[in-house]
Length: 293
Ligand SMILES: Nc1ncnc2c1ncn2[C@@H]1O[C@H](COP(=O)(O)OP(=O)(O)OP(=O)(O)O)[C@@H](O)[C@H]1O
Image 1 (cartoon, rainbow, N blue to C red):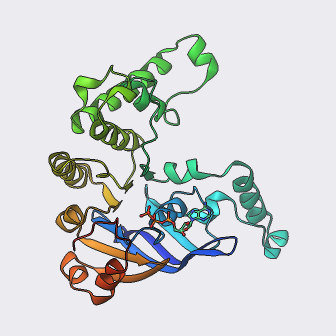
Image 2 (cartoon, helix red, strand yellow; image 1 turned 45 degrees about the vertical axis):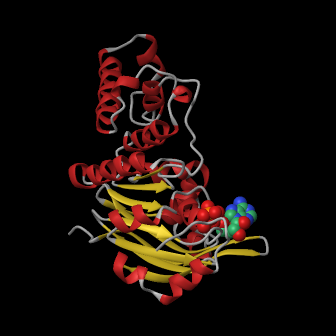
């Protein structure tokens, strides 16, 4: 039976020395939905993303992904400490040891979760299409001998990677820029390329960190349409962090609001807009944060 939720976050905690960035964060993301994680600056949104994607190892709680036909506990694939029961259970010991040695955020990605970054992280000196080919290195045939002898299997894998790259360039309206240097494109195009790159890894859940930051209203509108296409035509579940409240309220079905590392509200756009705790959190936000709910 397919789980209704693609992601569950239970009692998530993240501590940096004396700073508790996340405290008992709980939410779930419905499969096939577009959801948003919002909150004032410093609320802990990016820290949640970093925990979900395995860039940070959460200091408490559980994150479970139900994608690619299986259940993945993010903490487990990042490598958990040994438990005393492992010493009487060789299989559990071996599994824990394997993840300690070879685990990491790449396994979270392989389990069906991809992300983009708040600060664009492309290979700016490489071409647009090369950026998309690099993203697929886990899926293509990486056998050294196959590469040296240019075997039919190797060539087939290479051409499949190229096809996939052009497929996502088409979806994100970037085909005409395929051979340009990534760094030479406009900011909006680079943001779309980041999304295309993430989609090349075949995720079921894509986490977008401030995808509309630095975009003008027309670009933001175009981006919202593309995000809807990912959801409707490519079965992607989308979770975004965004400060542009117009965009959030327009495309999100479900919104989770964080403040000072805690979830203060969850619900649909209309509930969130009129929630007094959310309004108070934003009214207490810094003056330079322009927010209209
Ligand atoms: N690597 C780190 N080391 C120490 N403190 C950190 C680290 N990462 C985040 N923090 C702290 O955790 C808190 C939450 O930060 P985070 O970047 O997650 O907030 P945010 O909601 O994404 O903010 P913004 O909207 O400004 O991007 C902040 O107090 C921040 O200083």
